[in-house]
Image 1 (cartoon, helix red, strand yellow):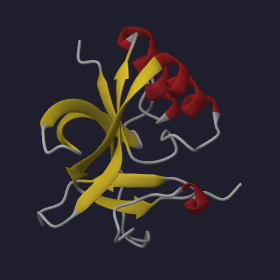
Image 2 (spheres, one colour):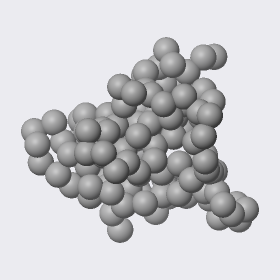
Image 3 (tube, one colour):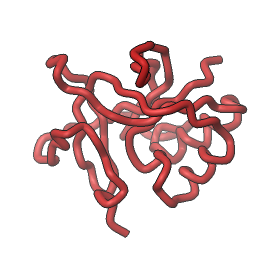
Image 4 (cartoon, helix red, strand yellow):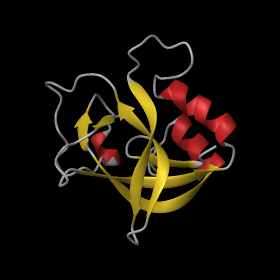
Length: 135
């Protein structure tokens, strides 16, 4: 099973919530990474969608999960795409190609936003910051 996970929102280091703490304790931080996509503010968290323009880049972090069989189902529940969630789920977990800071590319799981983004603010920088998440 793939053991890498690209995160771009409230699962990144610097966020203080139970799932960010789970990731911090159950995974190894591999460094900053990017992937093609567009980032939107959904509420106090972002959503990443596919982008046609190669200039649209989302900045995030890459982790290696120590126990992906145990950690991924818990993260799926957090992201609203766990077992038993009514379709269409808010997010879907997919495999994507992400680029590391040194220019190398790897495949990693990523949570893709699965609901319409009409009316949601586009985060043009592609970077979601802790201060973007009130409370």
